[in-house]
Amino acid sequence: MFGLDLDQLVFVVLATVAVTALVYFFVFDHIELQKKTDDRLNSVKMAATDGLSKSTARDKQAEAVKRRKSVQDTLNDIDQRQKLRDKNIKSPPLKMLLQQAGMKVTVRRFYIYSGIAGLILVLLRVFFGAPLYLAPGFFLIGALGLPRAFVYFRRRRRVAAFLHEFPNSIDVIVRAIRSGLPLNDGIRLIAQEAREPVRTEFRRIVDMQQVGVSIPDAAMRMSEFMPCPEASFFGIVIQIQSQAGGNLSEALGNLSRVLRDRKKMKAKVQALSMEAKASAYILGALPFVVATLVYLTSPNYIMVLFTTETGKLIMMCAAVWMSIGILVMRKMINFKF
Image (cartoon, rainbow, N blue to C red; front, side):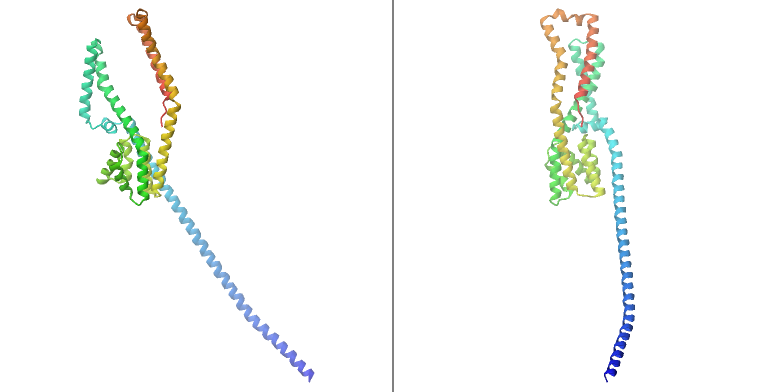
């Protein structure tokens, strides 16, 4: 009985092992198949993810290249137009020169005033006893030299006033943009509230905008009426932002900081060069002061230079060499920004 039970037990054990092996065989195949399927799905997902990442990276790179090329093309176009404007700034026509000086005089009336100034200078020279053969030279000086020198003086003074007020106006535009106003409203605000000549220049931008000219193009034309690099900087910032995008308030804020730094540097250079300028003024005035003192103390001693041919030749040579020395000193102490 015990032996029969043992045989039955062995049979049960063997049957259980066989069934377990058979179940494991089928289940293992299913597990392996499921594992292979999962691995294949994971590889497909990873490939799709990698492809999507690579595609996104390629799109971003292509977009960056396209944007960089757009900015480069914009800069090249601005550079070409700026060269043409610089040529007009260095040697502008008379009509543009009068506008840059802020003078509301027509070209015809300017020529009339120039002729009158030339005639007045000739009459004054003749009244004080100058020879008549020098009258054409005095007329040219009075008709061409003095009026244009006055216009250039007015232009330099107007540019200096513009540079003094321009950074404050840009700060106002920056605050207007940060408060939610569009750029054209900020420009209109400056055209109404700023000091001259900044108000006139921004009013010109508003007038151009009303006749169909875009703000970037109108800002780029500011340097034609205000011949200074700072006006060109403003137009370039507006032009680049309109084509390439970006934070306009931050760009204008950086421009305002750069303009203030340029102003500080210019004042520092002027302060450092003031000693050299004072020395140049003293050296330039010293011959005239000495000649005046010698004439007051011993007039017969110095009149030889004015009454003899040798003295006149010496005076002419001295005037030429002194002029050369003054021009050299002026070139050494004159710093341009």
